[in-house]
Length: 170
Image (tube, rainbow, N blue to C red; front, side, top):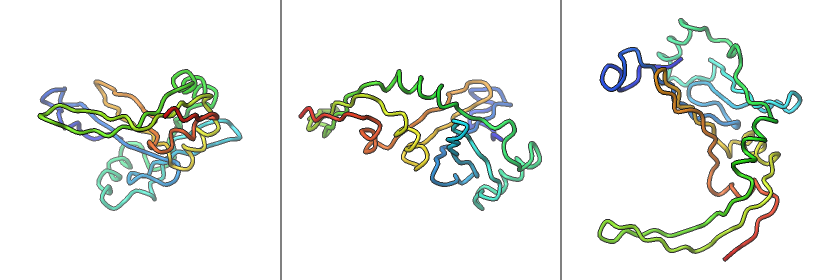
């Protein structure tokens, strides 16, 4: 489902393919992908619906149809809740969220720290809700020869929602 990498034949082999996509739970992407939360089976699913592909991606859709068909992904990629909870919980257990203004003088950056929050007790249910409501995004950056992996990205103003305890430091 990937297309030719822009550096194929230059920096990478001529066959290098790239698939980059940001998906969320609140709506389908322009290429027909969406995050589905299956609470019963405790899975975060990656879903595809060819009917949701935008008109600007119709040539891509035609290529997908010829290579793999337009049905739901099979096998359907997913993350189990327990695996996600463990991984996210180890990375996000506690954190500080610091707000700063930045100014550049003579090509040097200066920061003025204005506000800080101490975030404690990661709340996995809030993580799942953020995925479902589209407040957290999933970025895919897959390539045939050098895969940059998958990333979960939350909108900055929603980070404190992922914690049971939020304390203003200053």
